[in-house]
Length: 399
Image (cartoon, rainbow, N blue to C red):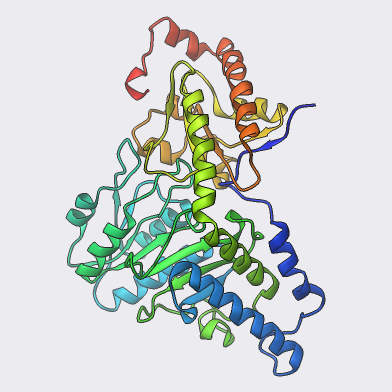
């Protein structure tokens, strides 16, 4: 039988045993409503308060600056739309973001454009990194919000968040970052990095799907997300999902306590994989080699179609993706890869491999052994590869 290798941790992760065990009592034993005054409810409230404190500690925040949500997309929407509408009251209707944000940010900004806001989409260049000087040049007197992701979900590049935060603080502009991929992977301190709002999601760090959080710095006042109750200090009505919130906090605490150890392990696996895969003819690594998340490697192969590559890897027991899981049903090339300057024909041949706590170096060895023959087989069936070989088309400038 083929070895089974799950290499799509940027899409979602398995719930860890530690997290599951932390959650179980709040389904069957401590299941009271945390808004209730009797003992069972107060026990649930105590767990909720502790989870908020644990999540805050991982970010260098205070507990009353953490608001629990259902996911990173909800957090992004609340932060961006809330900030936009709050700043509009001060006459500021300009937003700056990047061209390769997650669709939770891009589509939110596009929705705001329909309301009359103006949005500047910064380029990210070939290495997939925003240039702070270009951000500064884009700011105007009308700019009320900058939203730049901490780490890209498809190619793993890390953005200069501390420098962006410092610039925004100096200009009196609110700064939001989608840190869904970064929390638990890199050290984050919202105070030191001048972050006003930060979005995160549980299922990227071994907590369950359906729970996330939004950090809102004290003093940043945005409209309520949901009216109807006093939960989340009146900002997001609705009975809290205590079990999953406890799971999120447990996952954050575990990940943040072992960041350096995990980074070293994942970086070693990543480096070995990249060095080996780049030996394949006409293959490129997407994004900066150094400024990237550990455990995230994105490649493009000339003359290969991404969906076929994924299916053939799956037959060999390897789960991977060709980009964001949120757009895996689309046949269009990744907007992230197009934003770094790749033509459609090259972007279509993409492969993202992302690793987590349960992967091993043996998994890397299996991928290194399995991938080249698949690439060779797909190219043997590809008219585009024939044209490349015959010199009729040339994409060497993108390699």
